[in-house]
Amino acid sequence: MNHLFENGKPQSIPAVLANRDRRVALQNQLTAKHPDQTVIAAKLNIPGPIKNNQTIRDFFAAGLAVFEKQLAAKFQFRMAEQWLGESTGPERFYLVDGPAAQVKRLTTEFEEAQAAHRLFDLDVLSRQNNQTVSISRTELGLPKRQCLICGQPAKECARSRRHSVAELQDRVAALIENY
Image (cartoon, rainbow, N blue to C red; front, side):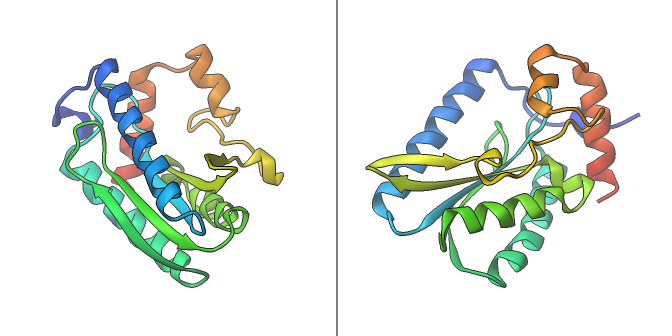
């Protein structure tokens, strides 16, 4: 039995949506203020109402330490902001000196390198025509994100609610525990 989700403050859908709006506002602010840099917004895909606790924060920090080494090998970057204690989940934002397409390839390589890294959601954003634009995997000919349980496209499983929250939480807990 997993204990990962026993601690933490349960989140409501309005709280998660309000945090998304806050994240989008920061992303827009970062791309507007730094139009010649690429922004990475890092967060975790955590199912269910518990999105953050000490174990989740530790996993997030450990995974991003690995990612930052890979990023530093190819690009100059700096952390622009981080929200580690947010009940809606830890987040970190980077400013990168490099083309968005190359940065997206690197983030996708990290996300796909091992099973636990698939919990990371590393959005890559740039400024184009005075707007913040997110670079998708499919734009670059990369495969869609796969479901942690069945390997089908993750968005299809999420939309159809193919797997229960308990099933997803068990898989996430196992990935974090074995990291």
